[in-house]
Length: 149
Ligand code: ASC
Image (cartoon, rainbow, N blue to C red; front, side, top):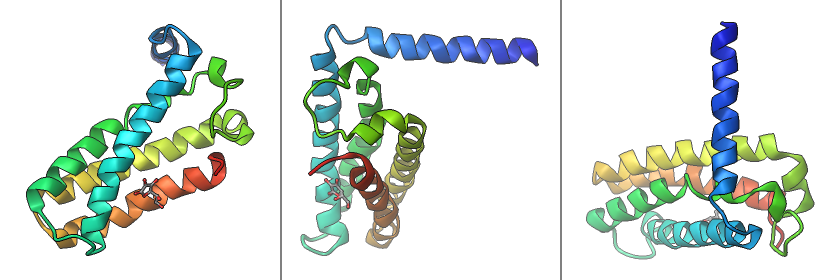
């Protein structure tokens, strides 16, 4: 058990280190996370337009949008490196002091994105509607707490 714990800790430290080492400059990390959020938001909004009946439901497009959201939902978090805290962005100070809550929020979004993707794959608008709300709520929860206007 002790060995397993130590291995897990080592793995966690390695992956955190790797995420940081991926960016040459802190500015690159900010650009990376903002870009991921931006592309995710574009495809999420397209799904929302269908889920809310603002545009006709297109099952194939919904499936593509949900697949993009799912993939992108995994990316932004690595861009919140400690060395970006001093840089200009919409991140509120609380984000840096509540990083485990932020990670919890990220997990909620990733889980919701898995459900949304599975729903879109069924081709049913009803299924998309049922899962879209949870995903939107997970976006909003973090924006309200950690993103300035
Ligand atoms: C979107 C988008 C978000 C969320 C959020 C949900 O389409 O870009 O950030 O929905 O507004 O409340």
